[in-house]
Image (cartoon, rainbow, N blue to C red):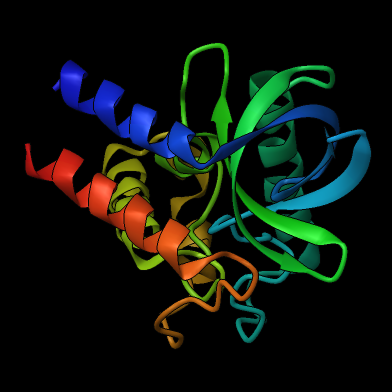
Length: 194
């Protein structure tokens, strides 16, 4: 299993770019410096507690804000300003990036880790999240929920109420070359088949 994880991480880093974390903005947005340019970067597939399942009015702003603050605190523990990261660019939206972060220290996948450790919900309708990553992150969220990890331990019912049903299928990936995406998915599927 350990060899499999190392191989998957190697495949992820094939398309990775180098950056430096400059600030944590909220539970799913960071500021990074890449090629000398400061850019806002959204963590692909990580939902905002303030807007997740907005139609559910039973979960009030104070509850959402408390979850958000706890998630931000956890993110700040795991990712510090000045830390070097690799990231896979999923897409651009105006001047912002949509990224999947790979931490240089331990090669962990931050977006996935946040969901698996119970400090983030999967944004199942993120149009920038590749289907392969969506499936992995959904499994991670179900794991966190079943094991009552992180925020699930005390706020399980609230988190359950914030989960949205998937209404969007596919990803847009307008500014990523199709060849890069196909090669990435091919390598990832080969790694998972071993």
